[in-house]
Length: 93
Image 1 (spheres, helix red, strand yellow):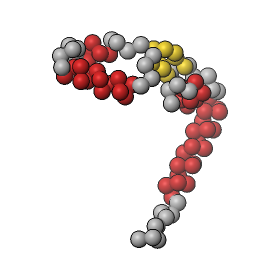
Image 2 (cartoon, helix red, strand yellow):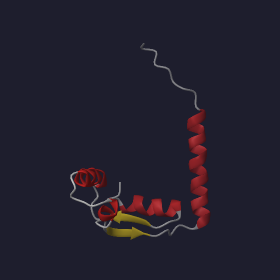
Image 3 (cartoon, helix red, strand yellow):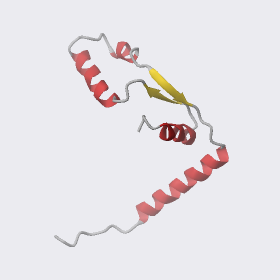
């Protein structure tokens, strides 16, 4: 997801905050490796690991507030519809 510029920009727009993309996109695997390294004593603490993080690109909010609000309200409405939909039952059992 973080490799997609459109998704990153949309996230920044909808949250109204700057969103940073890391240089290493596989952050889940990297985080696991960092924690293993921490356990093995390769790193002093989490602050040392945090100091290794690098930003490849930042995305600033650009969407007008009116549009953001309209899209967010539409999302809330869609969530409400899904949550209130009757549950489907599997008749094969």
